[in-house]
Length: 120
Image 1 (cartoon, helix red, strand yellow):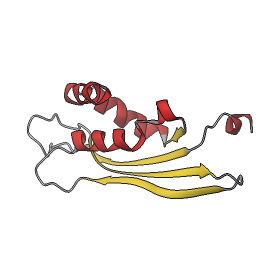
Image 2: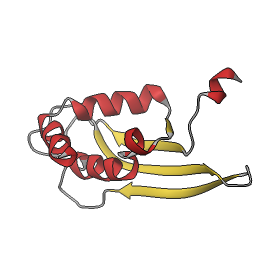
Image 3: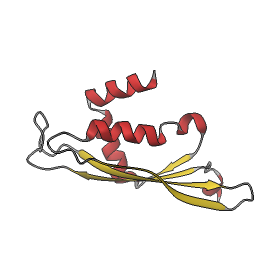
């Protein structure tokens, strides 16, 4: 109960779908590198009367053949939940998988540059 009291609304629930193929789909990518091709984002808000509402807030599905999805995935995720540090809220995810994917994406120089540009 104490843990739940620390949660700040809105609550954001994210789920990723990824693959890490032994034979990369894209040029310049190492074997077993993460390709993040889909996410869903649901949001729970507390209404003025104290009840809660849940709605599907955002989603991303990479459908462009022959291109690495990671940059577009990261842009879409940033657009979906990037304002949480400023506007408040708590993000929930299955930490083992999503944390591994986010760490992998953030270690990519292209993604790091992209995020630094987005912040300015």
